[in-house]
Image 1: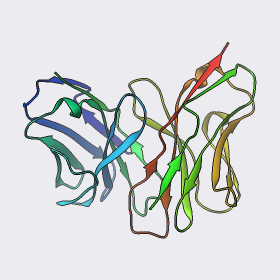
Image 2: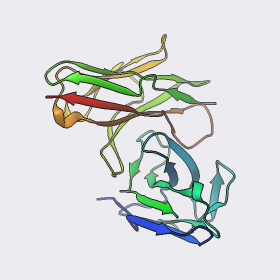
Image 3: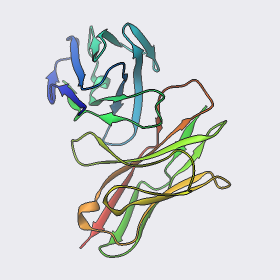
Image 4: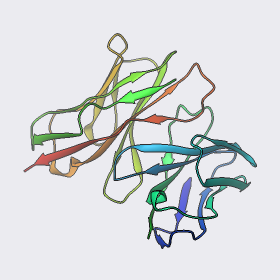
Length: 113
Length: 115
């Protein structure tokens, strides 16, 4: 069966520090991968999605970046965190052509102090 | 462009009563529609989807939703609410006629079921 792992579960980082959040999927191949951010426990904002290794689409210009070094690995990074980067970060995967919907990871609560 | 509106920030209902969580969408073509539920500090869980076919879709935990093309709506319903249904609910859409590969989510509706 397919599973998605996301870590860490919680993270407290100072302003200006770097960030690396990792997401891995098991039990499937060639998934589409997504990073969403949820602010204040409400709406979901799509940050990045990837349809293959090294293929990243950015939805919102900001100081975050994403990489996909392996088929089932998706990494969200920042060189210097801002206070506004605080939020709940969710990774998700789907199989093309996407009408099966997403499977979400359990999320990372990031607090920038 | 694709978009989703959930007009109610919160819905309150008594246990045992029917519940409705509203969702309207906008796409240029035909939609794929989804409902997800989120419990505190957790990821989203899939409830149900409309792809094609019967307009009434049945999903997990006794939930169902009706696709109404003329009203561009996909309201979530349940005949008898449980306290354990209290959570945050998200509607999502994807336009099947565009190349955009990602779902667009609504802002969420908090469902509170009182005992």
